[in-house]
Length: 378
Ligand SMILES: Cc1ncc(COP(=O)(O)O)c(C=O)c1O
Picture (cartoon, rainbow, N blue to C red):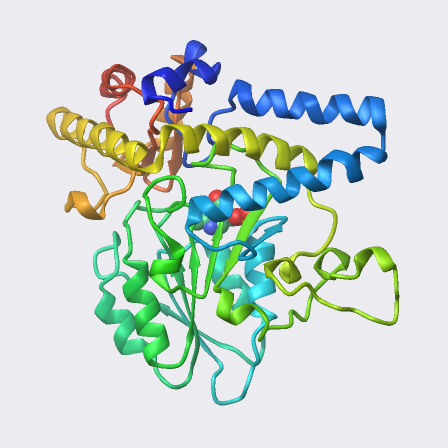
């Protein structure tokens, strides 16, 4: 089945009552996600724990399979984990840590949780590269910083602060040329732009259903490059990481041969269900269509901001932009609160009103936001 962005609008009830332009915080909830959630609750009522064996394990496998295809990874390359922070912690605790390779290189524009994994480890040196313009990074900065002492090049696919898109294939190459691993926080990549992880050659990629995949909070995805999986033995783990979990043998831990060895304990099953609903819609609309539509919406928003005299902290080059647009404002929390009174949901980050349209939005909604924002100048 295929859906156009316009047809997909009816799936999202919030679009009938609000002007919803905050998908980079939380993707809209769909009827489809709600239907899967109701199914889960119904089985809990009628089958109790036996639903695990007959339905829920299979739902987890279905979600893993769909997300693997979506990210362009082969079967067995994806783990379901509780959060991006947990995924990154597992990655940090899966590679050998020697005294010669103990540096991690990230940028000041990355989401802090990416750096925290390593800043708490006394034997790791964390290097935070500055952004030359507060918007993006030059690949040459990473190329200069990554060397034979580097364990990880750890950075984002799209920066949460500015929406700046990075070339993750080039980042992987920079890391590999120096013998380092490349880990990408892809929370704002997956669901915004089409790509295939197999082609990028990154070692680890984290994503999640919360934002652009419209699947809600409580779960994240960890992709591990297949050639690496069996070389790595996570030093934090749990029974879902064990191939022999249902033998309940306390003396023998035998990890899965595939990326499930990076899983830990019982996942948030309600999110497995809502994530399936969101993922189905994303797949039916298609990533190429979503990326094209988001580009149109972003171009319209950027032009509208220019006409209204708003300044942006957003890449000037449209090819480096994603659908996170930062409008400078001296009272961003106040503006966001007043926009909410008008039924417009956006967010703020220091000094900025943050607007993040997705495929289900329209130019009319963006025009409505801009008109309202003009009456709260900042
Ligand atoms: C880029 C990015 N990475 C990581 C996170 C945090 O992820 P989690 O709460 O799943 O650890 C966020 C949350 O907003 C984010 O925007």
